[in-house]
Length: 280
Image 1 (cartoon, rainbow, N blue to C red):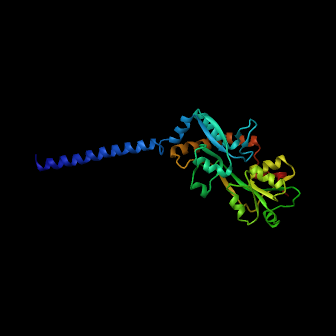
Image 2 (tube, rainbow, N blue to C red):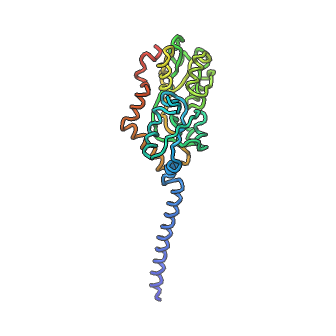
Image 3 (cartoon, rainbow, N blue to C red):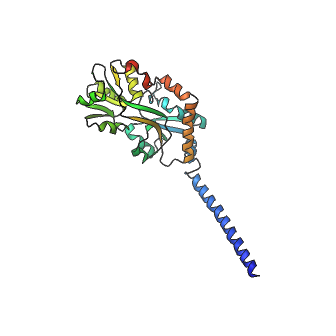
């Protein structure tokens, strides 16, 4: 065999080895993805278990106990739609705000509803695109005379906040005494019972309380002291394709009007339409 022929054969061999190596490498990468990183493993898990488990803490009317005794609310509508499209059961799981992240980590539920994306939480779990954006406001007794954040702070009395909420730390920055509550409704109860002069929380929940009890009023901070996007929390190991499916479900519910219709039906109040609910 000539030297030239040997060189040609050697070159061809190198090319063949490179192609074979690339094929196997792609195959191994594809196989790894099917195990949980790139091929919709989270979605497959939901289909296999036959249910979409959603952790829901109390923040009515966005989330809370429904007439049938289960947890629900307009915030979870995109997830209910997704469960229907996937042909699986939508399973609400009662949760506490302070245990939402640990619940996801322990696989007690697949999604955490109405969960604000914070830096601290993002170190432990992942988040979907925003589902709803809200302001943080105060709720006080109508005869309290408190009309601003300054009035509330200068009163020198404790304020109530649900522990584990994203705005708990913001209220702590005012260096005032705080009454910690298990959930947002309990923080309102603490204020009504006189254990706090005001309660701080998300506008939909506090406005709902003021609608049901005319002796309560909303104090909307000016300037705003807290505003947040509410997302869905998910496992830190969720794959990109499955996360995209969740985000599409959120966007579809917004685009087809069903999400806004659910908000309207639940009586969620727009900040610009507080009217008599706001302390004057």
